Image 1 (spheres, protein in one colour):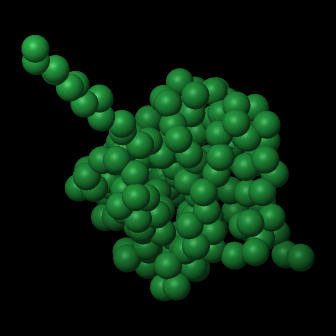
Image 2 (image 1 turned 30 degrees about the vertical axis):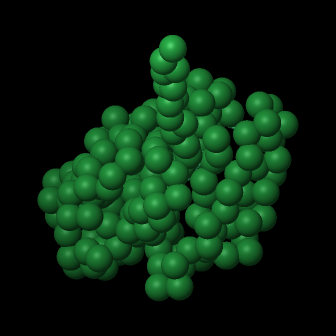
Length: 188
Ligand code: PNS
């Protein structure tokens, strides 16, 4: 008698959620490190009801997909609704988040607790790399708005997309801050 042993492989899945408006080198560091721990890392691009995004969702998805193209096991997907439901649908073992500071932790703890409350999914926090603690999407956009250099903080494709979104007419340099949208130029 022959016994056939069928090995059913278990694939570990992590979900890395965020607005990714835009994806930065800090995010990519977290994706790479998570991909070293889990078989699959889904970069989950969602809407944060508390923020208004510079880049439309499809552009954030496109740029994230380009940015993670070289990272084995990393994929990109939209979160159409609740993150906890998305994790359940994808069979995710864990949510991964990067932490740069104590204030990041303050923001993240209630979300981690809520996601666990909803479906039981746990959140794993990875401390930001020491050299990347200052890299935040909001700061990247602010630097770009004011004419600063964002190369090195984001991929070239992302830098081009951010500049195009901020300066649709291509005007940049002197006076850039006043020609960019969402700038309150009133004196305080
Ligand atoms: O990069 P952000 O802005 O901190 O990402 C926040 C995001 C998109 C992960 C969060 O707002 C989210 O999970 N949105 C999906 C809707 C949801 O599940 N809301 C309840 C969160 S506890």
